[in-house]
Image (cartoon, rainbow, N blue to C red; front, side, top):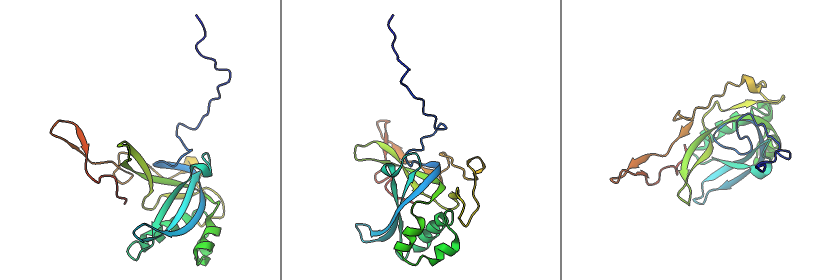
Length: 193
């Protein structure tokens, strides 16, 4: 009987049992902040956008998170940005950043741990996928010296993620049609928190 497999050239990649290359819902132990920009949605709502990527995935695997800065959303967005920023710089440094360019220079290239909440959605092919979101604080911890908050080692993290917890992960609402088949409700999964 001929050999079916040749393991000589196979390398085993030990990643701790989790995919840290891409940003999915869950706890990512080494997130790097990329670019920080301002923009507006198609409807004209202004936002600050923070690009992030995992150490393992690099910039090619980055994801952009928008923090809306309309009058109604400003307070919550600034709280989330401050929660992130104080895990990589001091509050004094953050308070000195008076515009988007100063904020970008302050945060870009800095690393931290983040718990990403999640939400199911239906893509254009009709497949159910998961999207990583920035939830409510506390969702971040310092992993390098120089932040307002002390460094927290991976094994000492206080962040918890439970996919069965509705605040950590929002599943699509499914109705059962008369045929007995599940059907995703119209518009489900298209709104954020």
